[in-house]
Length: 337
Image 1 (cartoon, helix red, strand yellow):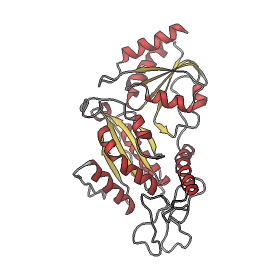
Image 2 (cartoon, rainbow, N blue to C red):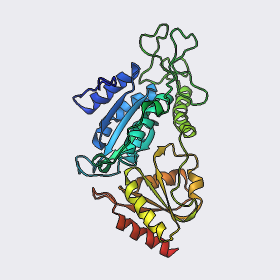
Image 3 (cartoon, one colour):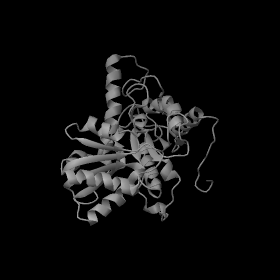
Image 4 (cartoon, rainbow, N blue to C red):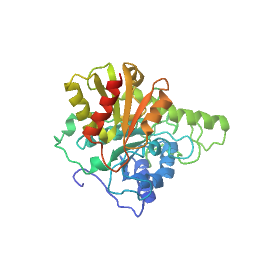
């Protein structure tokens, strides 16, 4: 930790943990706070503060069986709607999900880069299955990692205003405490566009609400398009997200070896969704969404792309998907076709 310049702090509770992280972000640090589903609920008010203050922050949620104490050592994917919408007001954040134990590093890097470059909180979803899993992982060289370019401003920048936005990203610029000539106000009360003065103006509030949402949606211009594993068209597209990847990929690969017209789209970026998502879906006769909850991602996809029919395949047992049960379900649909 000392070699990397990392400062860690074990807070007395979840709220203190995230508020301390927000303070670190305000001071110019790359701030991260970690938790599971119940802790994410406790952090929700402070996430809203980071949203309206427009500060970069990564919140890691290692999902487990819920609600409440639930199955504290078992895996689940049931925090998705909480990550997307579990805050007061219109409170948009970027949401991404790691796919494998080794890919957790890359997902955490991606979350950090997006938070810093777009000045917004990012929720990174993993799960108990990934947390307890292991995988060989080649340690990358820091020099080979993409550069992170936060929108920092120089001392005495006379053009600086706390809520003046980048015209492309809509992110505000980042002035740090103590910088010469850059005293400013941010905080939990609604701010006037550009100047950052406290504002109760109804039209300004609506403008700022829309700007914060559009800022997150424009992240779609900076993330990869959704990949399809297998053919880009066919009978059945299997859709998954996050840590279910290993089992789903194995099931799909084994059916493809038998000549089945089946492909896989495993989502890492959830909000915003990749720009080509609708195009991917349009090339298949059937779509099945597999997730360890009662169908939260399927419902979210229905909200965004209502013209498609989504078959739900759900498991909420505190256990990961088994390859044989996935193959049985996929074969059932393929035989109907």
